[in-house]
Image 1 (cartoon, helix red, strand yellow):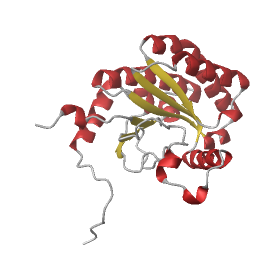
Image 2: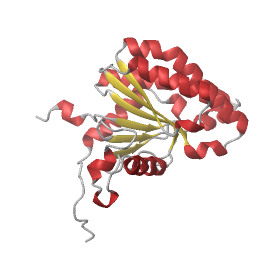
Image 3: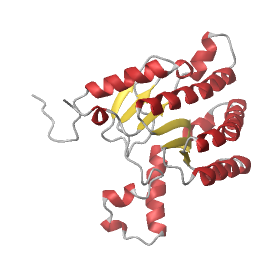
Length: 237
């Protein structure tokens, strides 16, 4: 009999899509969808922990999202600040380590301080890891990793995959085994493009604010049913 633990992903990445559609279908402003999306994060974290998955990466704000209306961007940034303030103590009590991945220099000084404080407070926790991708882009992450190695004086002509992996935002964590995308879109949108090279992709029509424990259970069942393959020769016959 297969080991049940072997059928669980060690690390799940989630592209949280559909907040705007959720709000529009209810005749509400987009900000209401974003607030509902924040509530979904807690449900999913609790469900993942109960299932035995203790590493999550949530795609909260991409490098491309700055092109959204200024008011919407401002609302999202306020929500990030409020959520960090409200949740860090409980996450810390539960032994969860918080990491914020992405280019921080474009964030407000206040948000940067809150991020640094949350990471410092939870740095020694070992029960779980929550990566929140803010101002994140997979291509930008690779560029930043190469720049970091160059600044360290590394010989880039001798670069190996392990060298670059160690310079990425997620260094020290297992690559995601499963990427979940909500709201039915069939693209990865520049999310963890290095780390997710061999991840399984699960797409659900469920909008992110409606995503919950049952949706996660179905994603895990789908993952467990896959015959995972890690490269090799393509059979085009």
